[in-house]
Length: 346
Image 1: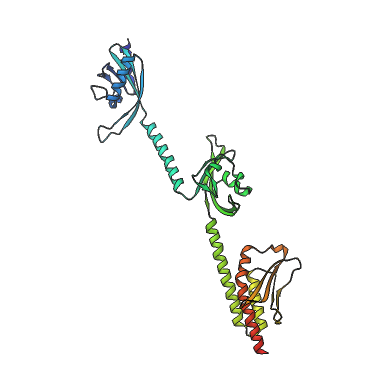
Image 2: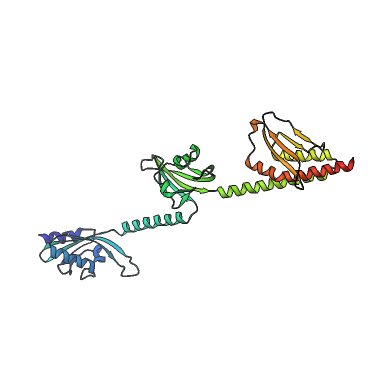
């Protein structure tokens, strides 16, 4: 009765199925089982499984890999079970898991590809969950924070600005949002973030993933270039003012005008150490922000330049400090030249 049932199963099953002797010779097999035997005997891996089933008199299971026999075939994977059905015969049942294996391998390859790209990329890749915790971060560091520090933590632990921390948990797609924040050492840092929201199978928001790039060096380089251009333009303006005006007072006024415009000041005062060429441009503010530098000629102080602007306009920035540092020596030359002209015209 057992053999009859096994024969009926082989005839009706769409899965790989065969009945064989205890030494692996085929008695009956359907077409789907062809990769598991040679037509007369089971392939070596399945035959070994059959011997185990015969010796233990119990069902044996194994995952079997088969190789292509022709150019039209491909390597296959089967989950195979062998069970005794009589003292002289065994039932072989299989399930083709090739597609499943290929999908798993493709997923593993895709993940490895992503890891390799993340490792090679200068961008910081991230993923956050619905509670705004980092569930994935690129290898390496971001703004001085290691991947170990970031993983499992919330962005707001590292980025105090709410505007910055929310970029890592967006609910709508975000494209190249550039913001300034601080790095681990407290230094200003500029980052650009691109992110997309994630949704679960029910359509509910469950986090976000994206990439961020550190643009600090680029933006600081651009700032330095802008400062250099501003210094060159201011220097050119002062020199042009000196060349275009033959009268000493007009020369000093033109130079003060150039400094005032370049630094967005409300007032510029150039003192000339008693030469009588002191110049005031604009309106002096009693409680203004002030920026002062001495001017020199041949190692000696020969005047002073003072910039002022209203409290509402805000204090002078570091770039403006550096700008005045670079132009003060040229103003010293302008004062000396104007003083010389004044002497010659007297």
